[in-house]
Image 1 (cartoon, helix red, strand yellow):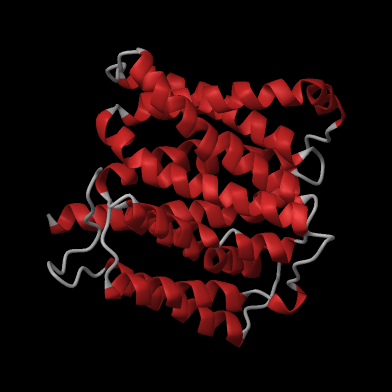
Image 2 (cartoon, one colour):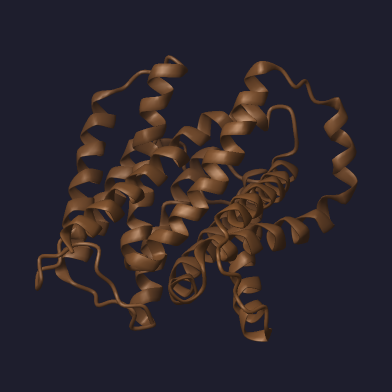
Length: 304
């Protein structure tokens, strides 16, 4: 129904708004602590928060059998531990410009995967929409500093692999979240990812005593855990159950637009004509992608 599709559309936009706001918030946090350790703590604390909410809501627990863990463990790795970990590690060996551009490959990779898996059909609208949105995101950056060479090749490869992991998560997660309770599944994913990452961050936890827990840091951390981790993953998984993986992925292109607006109001950064022009490209691409030429109903996908 059209009202349901409008709700999904609103949720997808809201997710990217939260992710976009999280860029400046995370920037404040990682100036004081190791980014991989922070990602680890985010997932663990979000897991506890999600568990409390799930228990209060009295959601029906999934059957914790071999089939459940056979699906939830790989998805936890792809969508959280590896998706976040590879990006953060790669960022240490490459430039922020390179990583920002490479991460925009997520929607493209998702589209390729779902088409190869025959989850979705490659229509004219999707091709035009993805190209327009991709151009908008790439051109909104200062690509004059983008370079691929021996100095950045390791970091570039790690960031790209992180993008590939998240694209696989969006594709394979659709069937999983269509079958299992979203709140319990998300809870388990947080705990599994946090536990696995904790094995590699065990010696870093002692550094938490050296952090200056000032007002700015505390507010940023609370927002990142509750809104940019717990709520975004919960809503993203909810949307995967109701929309195609390709449509969920293409909304990632809204993140730089939101980040630019937030930076303008809170960091005093300038909104340039290029940003406005590229934002129009991104929104135009989204509109093309959402229109189904046959049924004229957006946000409709199969759940293979």
